[in-house]
Length: 345
Image (tube, rainbow, N blue to C red; front, side, top):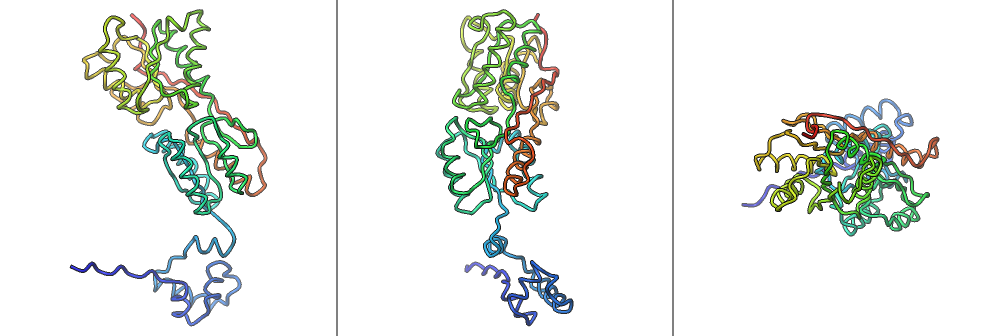
């Protein structure tokens, strides 16, 4: 069976032919309608409607010398934290009629660089990047080629690269301080690689809280490495903790993000551990579902939407030369206490 031919998209030439005008006149109707006589404009508008003509935005941008697309690279778009942050970016871009191209690096420096290259090849106006490491020299090179860059969810190690971040040390400290105030004296930190700035900073915050309480981190804190920063990783970590001999399960559990905490709850439930029981389980990000779980999750809230919105605002204002505030913004996190964190017994 021969597949049906795809219908051909109407071109600006088709519109000009149908309206009996030049291509230039159609272009003026689309971009500078005040230059076209009302009768001619009406004829062109009728032809556009009859042909279901949709302007080719990249071609128009090329002719006009303007670009209205911004690329965004996050670690994993499946994580609701990054989805909400991307929505903040989109909401700000929409105010200036810019569009969004979104990609996940999967915490791979090579994949991050590949998407940045693809974005450049598509001629984006700028890029917003959640970096996979501390080395931002490749982003400096992107800027040197005329593409604006803003770091997302990370303070910038290079003052010339704007950034929007959250104080993750303070967030980790708030989580651990809460667990300690509930009387828990052993804390398992379900954490990712310290090559990820957020993981490193949140763990440093835990250590600060323990020291501030006059306790020895070596006796209180156990870091549990995660294979993946998602629910599967959290469940696997709990399974491993429960399977070992002797040490038992720490009654304080701090998870590097809410997806890991959700997986930890699932692992505890499958092992028959009563929830919330005598555990203090704390996540990070405060994604929407955190408050809707069977045992609502205590979490460190980040201003997710505002992170994306402010980063996009900095990028656009730098392009137009209208920037009035700082190029380096640091938000403060907030601990939201729910039923998953219970006092020690």
